[in-house]
Length: 230
Ligand SMILES: C[S@@+](CC[C@H](N)C(=O)[O-])C[C@H]1O[C@@H](n2cnc3c(N)ncnc32)[C@H](O)[C@@H]1O
Image 1 (cartoon, helix red, strand yellow):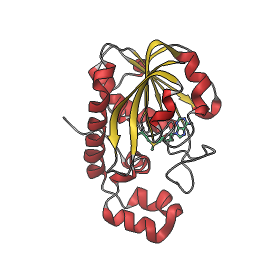
Image 2 (cartoon, protein in one colour):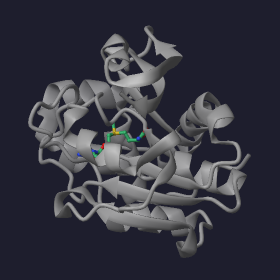
Image 3 (cartoon, protein in one colour):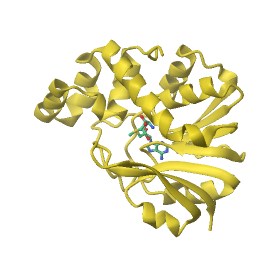
């Protein structure tokens, strides 16, 4: 499969969203010069765009394989914190009659801080860039809608499947979305996300299945598929 089409702005965002795409030199630079210069300058100008495209495409194909069996015959997708949207491009090319609603942030923090973010202040995206990435990778605009998290005007429809890869309960508390998810999940909806506390979700959902365990990578978490709020 071909790699995604990206330009410098998209490569920078992909790198900020997926720090594992940084090579050793860039990681060193981040340590030496600090988060501000890294987020603003080095992540944009000290990168090899083609290499990031190849590696980002591979990472997204791997993510796709972890969710593939859950998405068959599903049409209405919600993606929370998709980043530039590589996984969603793969979904929309695989399921030609699917539609994806995106909820994302429309800013990049001055000094990106990775890890748990109690106040959910960190943002690593621009909605116009997400839109541009989808169009550049041949996704028709009929196939998606984009919503700004901070405008709180979320899509009200039911979803067959909700995906949040390294965003919900990985960077910020599940509670932020809990009431909203209760409204948009039906009996057979599936919610897939990454967390370090899979057991906690057995108190919240009738069914919780661990679909991926990450203990040796930078992510150190479990990917779970949940159904039916208790
Ligand atoms: C670590 S990145 C993961 C991006 C993508 N899912 C991936 O796997 O490459 C986390 C993403 O969550 C977004 N984000 C942060 N808070 C959010 C919120 N409350 N709602 C939706 N997205 C959010 C960030 O802007 C960022 O793009």
